[in-house]
Image 1 (cartoon, one colour):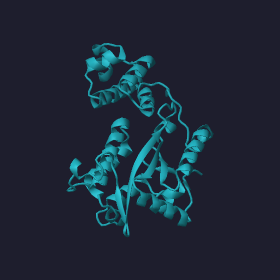
Image 2: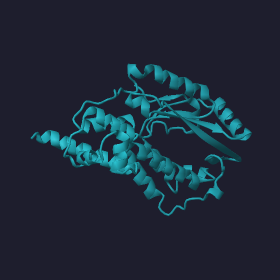
Image 3: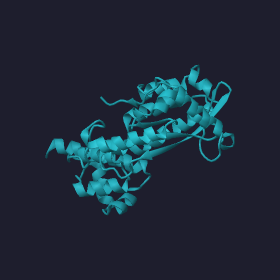
Image 4: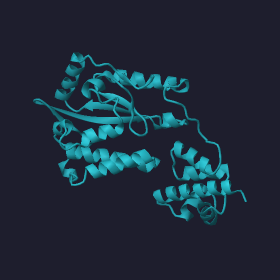
Length: 275
């Protein structure tokens, strides 16, 4: 018996079982979705059987796995990756990077940025650099510590910091549930620690009952915003599939005027972590 192959199969079984339980599927339900038998699913999870490539793809589809996780599942079973992965600054990503840059530039004078799967800022427009000076180059972990610092300047800017903080936590947990990324897991754990003792606001206390709306105070001006997220939903390449572009919008006239004035008066330049 090939010991190395058996170890790989066992690794596959552990991963498959993790995702099955995470998706709250029984072996019977997964077997039905993947067009196989519960007995075979059991054998795969315990390492008694080794899957073929086609079955792995059916299982991955049934489990709704992101393509990075599909590659990891393939690797754990001893197969080559199913999907390509390129560097964000590479030639293959260039036309999509140009599209992101155009979106960011067009969104001025309102903040916008592009992030990778763990929250590193890849690109940001001038408005983002002006609104959050010096933060684009920080690691996501450093930004978490800055945002959640109970004695920090950022916390004191918010009228609804508790609501914002729990929104960050919930979004990170959602991202983690989709990816099982260990770095995201560490971020979620740290945020949970920093939120210890912070009461979650109820729905009735939300600044906006329709969509989450951070409210920040700058002098006598309260800046109210909401954000949308753009993704390459149909990407079949790992890096691009994980990029998200966040666009911030003002919710009222005074907030719009704040960003327009800030943009016009700022000497900030767009940020790019490339090169």
